[in-house]
Image 1 (cartoon, rainbow, N blue to C red):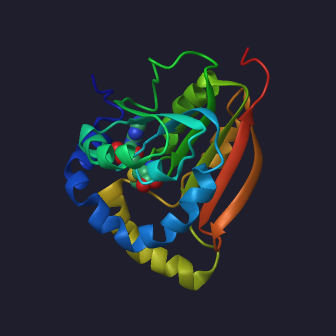
Image 2 (cartoon, rainbow, N blue to C red; image 1 turned 90 degrees about the horizontal axis):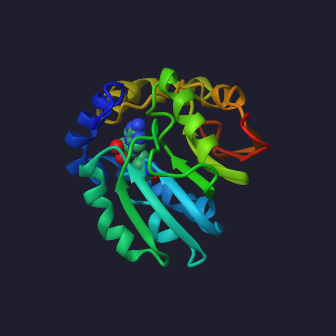
Length: 213
Ligand SMILES: C[S@@+](CC[C@H](N)C(=O)[O-])C[C@H]1O[C@@H](n2cnc3c(N)ncnc32)[C@H](O)[C@@H]1O
């Protein structure tokens, strides 16, 4: 059953899915250079949330076992072909980042989400990050990739021009406060951040510390 809080996103991605890879192509030309760095070194049990059309899947190594989740069946059906190209076992499943019910506490080594948290509204980030904290084993790690507004006026202006399209088609915003939400989530810490491009595409890495309480 769909959570009323995320039903609008599911509807949006049902419409976007057939055209997603075509619409995203100008950006994916850049992203595909980064994806091997984001997931290629992961080992153990990986939970990828908001897997979309599966763009990361071919870049995992054979040392990972991936459970790949998405809210949208339409997006998952497009991820199947890429799951078949992955060098590791991949299980695709419909699930909402806000309630990862079928994932036991402290059971995953890695939580990966690329371009999910710029889609998730700020008010939905705390419950989703609490779920991330719950499912990561102590010492388990996460990597999130975010898009943010640039501080450079020219770049920011271009982003502002694209913002209505990005909002309408993907539900994404460039002003989500993901890092603040992570810092307020019990049991997880940010260990590093790295710009993948300019000051707009940020890789946030962190880990699960101690008991959640
Ligand atoms: C912008 S796409 C990113 C896809 C992919 N991660 C990538 O790097 O290309 C965002 C994806 O997150 C999914 N999504 C949105 N809200 C979600 C939620 N609450 N739980 C799980 N997936 C969600 C969407 O269906 C969509 O496939």
